Image: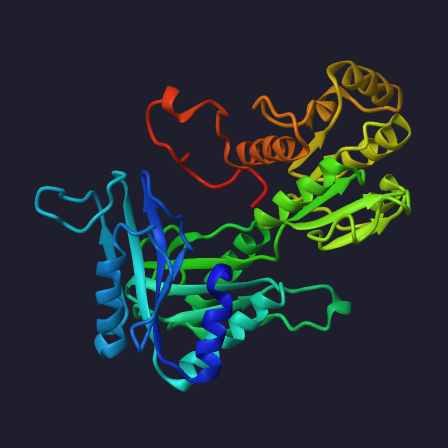
Length: 382
């Protein structure tokens, strides 16, 4: 959704009717994950993608039918029939796509409220009925309870058809939102657990996860750039004013001049945060890593040679760190790509973060068999 957010907000504000196709389920290998969207407006303009091109043509036709009044639909695409020129996926997987229209002013205003929250990096979840006893396309928007000083209002708007279903889905949506997960949940008609009468797709929009980069060196500049590209909110921190400047890190969301461990102890770190320690200086590293190991961060990568890392581990043990905590450190940082330049090293670091997030092997895909995309959700960063 974020990749076409400006286009959707423009259509809502300009009063342009459109249909939105959303990937709600993926089985096996598929080009896009649940939550990927494609929009088709009344003029036939297309933005976004649900399959990287495999089934876009057919989804376009379905979107036009829905926009013309056919009602919300869930369509499924599997393996394509190449000989019959059938519409489908060449990768062998199956995807399910919800197509619904935002044709009226009220519908667009409801969606615009969600888009505004996403644009402001405020957490929100959107639940939509896919099938079953409730009406397909029924929609409930869920906000979490936030800290009192945020001046933000928790709650819900919309309905899935019954108070019990709304209550059950609201609870689950807030839990999924806290984890940054998206997917289909099943309920009874009135929200009963362990029943499969109603399928509800819960799409969560959590604020971007954080990347904290410590050490204002050339490798940090490259890492900040690739972190922004991957969708992280990037902070670069260094105690040296001459190095921690906005001019040196134009792509970072913020540049902080502070002792690294003091800043880390004062800022928010959650289970999606990744920490990259690139200082390789004991007077910075040891207190910083001692603080990092007390956080729930998903990934802690540390630059330095193997000899430097052995010395670092000894200092951390002397400071009281146990082996279970020390095992969380990814050091030397990055995957073995043969990287030399700061930019190549940043790619290596990013590759290790992605591997850690999804549980990949880090080996060439050509050496492996089976599904390319690992089943299940992320291991902690999303």
